[in-house]
Image (cartoon, rainbow, N blue to C red; front, side, top):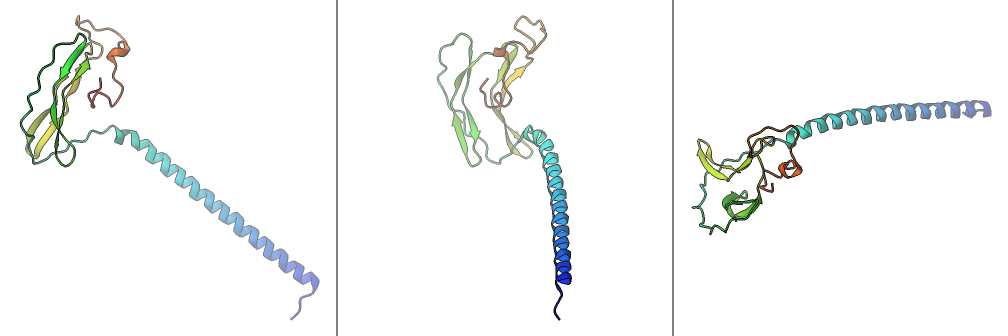
Length: 161
């Protein structure tokens, strides 16, 4: 059956309108998917800072070897000596040599210590402990203290402050 020019043009118009409806519907669906994805990403990102700040404690069944004897270097003004200790690299104990660390007013340094608990051996990494607003004279002062007293996040655990 042959279509007249008028009917063929009407059929093309119907096909074009149908095509536009499919494109518009697909576009709206994609927008909803993208919007839902962005909401999911934003929700996950809001949880990440809390996860990043969590501390991990690993218990192992193998106790550390005996401490190595390190010669104690002569004192240095403004520094404390952090003695070496056995660290755990995930597979074996590795020796971390002692080093000088700049004193921090209002803090005391606790050296790393292995403790045997009910679930195995656990390393307390030690580090700077104390009150950042209490100074050597025992007086509390407002504010964060001076820059020398402040340790950036994550650095104290590494023993860098």
